[in-house]
Length: 164
Ligand SMILES: NC(=O)c1ccc[n+]([C@@H]2O[C@H](COP(=O)([O-])OP(=O)(O)OC[C@H]3O[C@@H](n4cnc5c(N)ncnc54)[C@H](OP(=O)(O)O)[C@@H]3O)[C@@H](O)[C@H]2O)c1
Image 1 (cartoon, helix red, strand yellow):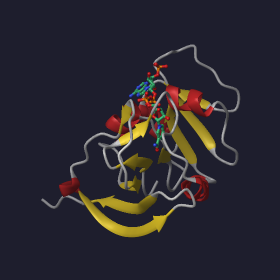
Image 2 (tube, protein in one colour; image 1 turned 90 degrees about the horizontal axis):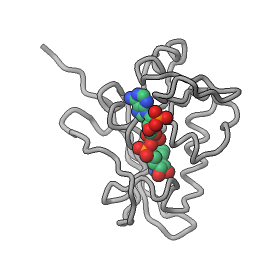
Image 3 (tube, protein in one colour; image 1 turned 30 degrees about the horizontal axis):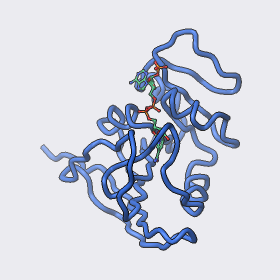
């Protein structure tokens, strides 16, 4: 594994979801998500899996749940994020794709962040955790306007190596 990556779309006020769904329509971002994650492992919390409601094609799905009896045909299921990451060790870049609870824990383990920042405030009930940007270096920023009229930026950060 070269990078354990988090991929997220978040509003100015850190909203990532409302009623178990995305609060915006950003087709370009879904395309980018597909391009980046295709061929890789995608690790997700049980609620995010259920909000998707299906397996995403051409990716290996890893679902994290504390429920030992949880089974989904065609997916791997683990009871901790660490166990999920261990299943992906042959993958150069597995992705943590949410939701809020998984991101909270995942930020400590991840080495790269793909953040789509939607430049607007949204009402929501799921939030991206506070990032300590002192630990992260911005390596790419691209600004866009969606066909839906929303302005957003694609940001890529990498974890700064600690020197002793
Ligand atoms: N904007 C985005 O990029 C984006 C991406 C993904 C999701 N979302 C949104 O995020 C929301 C869902 O987030 P959420 O926080 O409610 O749910 P979540 O993180 O998707 O799932 C939470 C569930 O996952 C399991 N889980 C999480 N961390 C675990 C751990 N460390 N060990 C074991 N099990 C763990 C537990 O399942 P059990 O309860 O089964 O034990 C927990 O209840 C939705 O609104 C969704 O649309 C947004």
